[in-house]
Length: 321
Image 1 (spheres, rainbow, N blue to C red):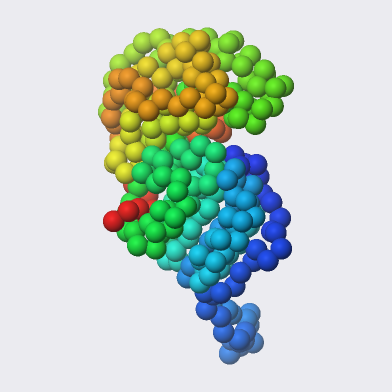
Image 2: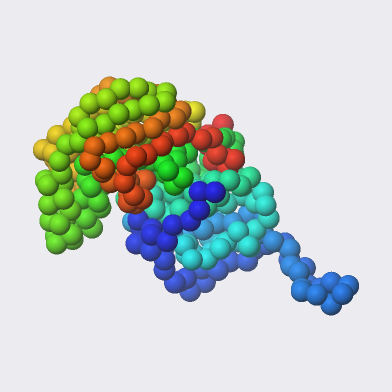
């Protein structure tokens, strides 16, 4: 199982606004006890909309509009501590409206399920949605959810932990945290993360499996999307492909990666082209000397050695037909 994470890049969990809970579309029947007088039962929802009210582009007006557009759905606020699967049938359609943090949380949670998932990308960067070809246009994304087709996607895994965007070993992982601090304009956090980037040292590495080789690097980045973190460009891949990519030049120097993070998060300059030489793979093992930190998306998950693999999820994402 990919499991669930309690940290959301949109800022965590938020209380429901007045009128947010919406019960149309939930097939309910009067509570009835079992023959033996056991627990009462109630039919579950076949359609669910989860709204991340803390996402960058969700306003009260957008929220009201979503409730009208999805009037036949059960609607709940995003809360990483709430097990929403208890509210829905095993193959219920789940739509998540939010940014990278909440979207990726829901996809991870449902990765081993049969739920078709729709995405309304309403965050700041929307890396995962953009990599799937879903543009930040609410009308078009709603149309995709209404008329599109569920398709399987590829998710990554490093040492048992799932990731949607990338696994970063070394400097690039520190840079993702740097970009997050810059995005939130938190000077103290930004300075601390920048210090980690500037203090990073190169390491020796060996690759085995689908890719074989060795060398010295500041970072090793294994990608499932074309950008990660504060929309830092890393490759040309998409989760629609049945493989991951190893980006050779991502984070090759301290100066390069610090400038990329600052330009992307603060100045809003995002590269449109790919980021250099890449190699496709399904499974690869990494050893380093000394041991270095491993990040799954923006979460620190341990230190090397690492095994990174591409896995086709049971879950399907609704994409344009």
